[in-house]
Amino acid sequence: MKKITIKANDFFELLKLKGESMWDIFAQLIDDEEKEITFVDDKDDYLFHYILPTTLEKLQEDKVLFSKEYADKLSGSN
Image 1 (tube, rainbow, N blue to C red):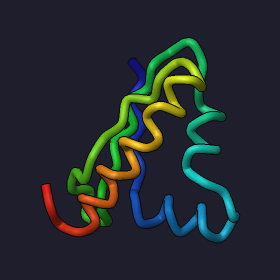
Image 2: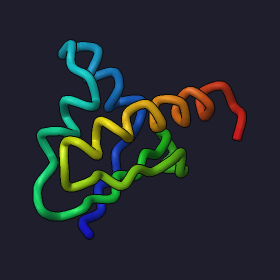
Image 3: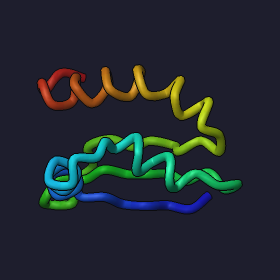
């Protein structure tokens, strides 16, 4: 499994500037290999991670769940 680390603030600011969603970016990364995407803060502290699936169908299923988990992290709850 390939591991990818992303600085969350920079990533989401870039998405806003480009007018794209992270799901569009994730869809472009899908291939035959699972990828573990780890999001970190500006101090490289772990925030959360996501295992990118190998199919668009699974990505769509994950979208709702992941969005809720991200909102929970932003609000400070676990």
